Amino acid sequence: MSRLRRVHYYLGAFAAVTVLYTIAYGAGMAVFEGASRTLTESLLVVVQSFTTTGYGEDATAWTTPQMRLLAIAMQVTGVFFVFMALPLFIAPWIEQRLTTTVPSSVDEIDDHVVICGYTPRTEMLIDELRMLEAAYVVIEPDRDAATDYYEEGITVVHGDPESTDSLAAAGIESARALVADVDDEINASIALAVGQLAPETRTITFVEDATLADYHRYAGADQVFTPRHLIGESLAQKATTTVTDDVTDAVEIGDDLEIVEIPIEAGSDLVGTTIRESHIRERTGANVIGAWFRGQFVSSPSPDDRIDARTVLLVAGREAQLHRFQELARAEARRQRRGPVLICGYGEVGSTVKQQVVKAGLPVTVIDLVEKPGVDVVGDATDPETLKEANIDEASSVVLALPEDTTAVFASLVVRQLQPDVEVIVRANETGNVQKLYRAGADYVLALATVSGRMLAATIFGEDVITFDQGVEVVRLPVGALAGRTIASADVRAKTGCTVIAIQRDGELIVDFDPTFSFQSGDEVIVTGPDDRVNAFAALLE
Image (tube, rainbow, N blue to C red; front, side):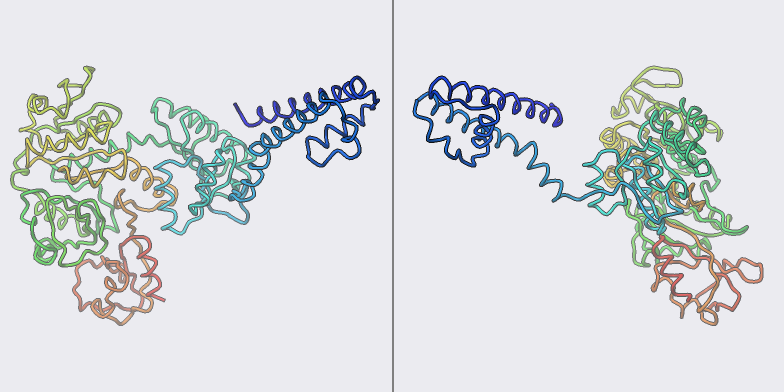
């Protein structure tokens, strides 16, 4: 029963009992005591009894047992109603004054991002916005949830995201963008409300059912994200890299420089060496600017950090240099594997992976629990016999696009046991399970929330996305205070955690340089690193 209904019942019962006792008291005094009392005099005695303030002279008039019992009944009833009032009125009043009050509007904010729906995806977006030092505000309809977010330091207002009043209170008219991630129907409703109130504000919505994306566009959404399709495309890019000579998913920096992440395969000559011992720069010309060690990102890794079969290196260089590095990162056994890409799971993610892999001209074998068009082998991806039936021994790579992380973990163990040298690429639903999947044998793991959050930030701010797993950006800044100093004396990596990957001088992009290279006035320095480290580098130039 709701609190409001309980309050109504309480007030109704209290009024009825008061009237009943007032009538009973007047009648009792006339019958048992032979004394007449007006209605107001009887009501006064009832109120005095309920409030325990005393009875005055009337108490001496009770000479019969019947009137004394009536007085006792009124006293007990009064105490009962007092105790009933505590949880209904007093406790909520105290709680309201002791708990945090969530604001219902924001003041003096502009060029911010309005977020409707606090999900793992938007949580990752908030992390990105904080690193970019960009303002945001979350609209949360549930007061308790809004209070929790507010106490965690999240900028939040309590309101209905479908309401134009709440959107106005969140400053939608001066916002850079709005992100709607509640559910498919509500997201479309939010887009309509934004179009009514602030048609110039960029509106980005999420849709789980891809067939509904057009309705979101009709409602006014400028961009519609289907997260499962997005992660499917990312998984496919990693799978095609295994069996092609192309360096995919690279970010171009000028005409001669690219940045890309490449996994180190089991059996590669690099496995077991440190960054220093690998001589990657000398052997390929590419620069190591970041690394994932068992799923943990390290900007500007130490020369003593050791490379293993689960390491993913973020490298920068010319296209030919990246090709040389890719060959160095591959295992001989994997170079010889030219079979089909084995996709386990044929939902939205798996079907997207298949479309992209087929588009790249590669053969595909699909495993799924349910027989349907597009599935080649019906069975459980955690069953060794099913994997053998799908000819896993011939597969160039295995993509685990399974709906449950627990199943994906076990499937990774089984695949790795059957084929130690096959590349295993996994989709994760929860970011917290990424480490577990790496330990289970995955070579590369993409988390749904991280991909979506990073892609959102890239879409809103127009930045290049080097990787969906970590906020790493590339900036080009005037040389400033570094003019006249060498790379070695500036010691940028040690001081800021950023890596100098190129220098722009007189229209020429210089990517081959050594520690003795000197900066000149008029140069532009191109560096890469996590967002907070880039801010430290910018301060160094002042």
